Length: 117
Image (cartoon, rainbow, N blue to C red):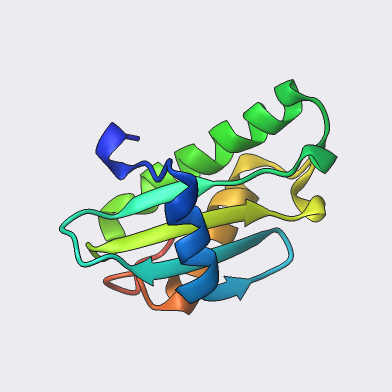
């Protein structure tokens, strides 16, 4: 994912949490908020309860790749925060990708009704 598509500052995360709309399923929670910019930024927040840093970073890499693959279908101008749930531990990449895409559709930030690759 490109640097301009990353949400990094704590204040942006807090703003998305407080003002944004959330949707969830068994594996992930997605918060999204319109940012009045021409780019969509995505942030991932993994709790320390998921395990040691190696496990948390592996999960973040998987979610980041799933988001990157869906980013071309997402409408421009949103800040998105993705939070994994406990059930995502041990799930294969295709389920994560499908789950994230479903949540993007459910929140209304996907342009069309394409099938997941």
